[in-house]
Amino acid sequence: MLSARGQHEEALRLIDEATAISAPTDYLDWQAETAAVRGLVLRAAGRAEEARAAFEDALARYERKGAVPAARRMREELETLEARKGPAEPSAGAP
Image 1 (cartoon, rainbow, N blue to C red):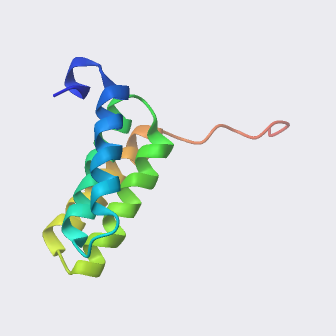
Image 2 (image 1 turned 60 degrees about the vertical axis):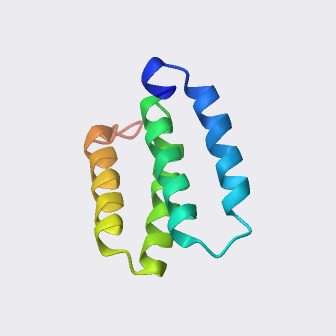
């Protein structure tokens, strides 16, 4: 909700709290979901590289858990980020 209103930093603060709560537990699903939500907020805030790292973290946790549909969703998020990235800039001095 906060991120949809443009309040990305407040949303990230709350996600960080949830992450701190879930980190010491064995609940991979919860840990993965907080990473996934973090990725969504970061993407909405225009912070694509940080979003990518969060989605990769979520993917690794979902794969460890064996949560196939959730892992597929994270792969789709990563593909979406890659597609939005566009073609690479030509290097300096390239013809």
